[in-house]
Image (cartoon, rainbow, N blue to C red; front, side, top):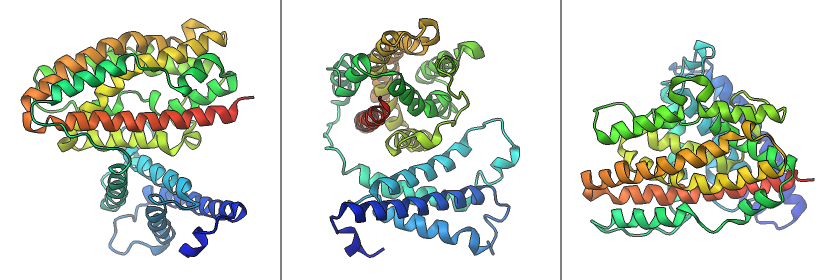
Length: 362
């Protein structure tokens, strides 16, 4: 597309460009679905009709997503959806076995790496990096976790606590469902390898997240109960097309870090932030559910995390993060980097949920 067109300030033109681009991205996403299920995906003479439109649209999205243009948001959404569709092949969904025929496709790996490379470069420009010298990582993590245990409530959190109506609350559940209904799946990808006290703590956390092996106590079951009470769909990915690129980016970041063992310290830093910060956020969501008159026994997902994640956060700091700082002193800064990145990505995702909820409010 001619860059001169993108520089016109006309709202009507911006809408037209954005709408046309969105249609192209939808069609290209359908092409990706066909590619994932194609028996010819990695053949030497792959039919060009399978890839031509998808590759052209992918190339444009990689340009438009990381600079200001009328189609920036739709390009980012497309890229994050593509990443998610490829990443989910790492998890088994108890569906048709043929869905995994291209699980190790070199073509899909190349697509994923193209997106992740451009995305990582862009993300590195979105926040200031704090230099952590050798020996300072433990103190840096302690300071951060203390601040994030009980932070000043954000505008979004106060909105849900005091003002959100039932439509806005349901929008929150839609956005959260993509991750919550398969909760802790990325953590499970990090638990192979040699046993040690750090590994044991992470395994104990996963065991609790999975309800000790009892489906009725698995955390995702509690989330499904909230959906059921409101007459919402309860199967994973039911609201995939209602999820913002910012929320998808958080999920895809977790996939990227957990699937690459070299990024293990960054993943753990991010998980530390998640466990530390979740109770303070979920207290506002529980207050919203109470204010809206929802049954406590059907909204116990919030309370469960308020209670358990306080303990998990302490485990993550004392038994995992600090222990890893001692084990890898020259790389301990990566834990802090992962923590700060997860805070940034989670805050951005939370703001997108807030905007979506405001749009649904009566």
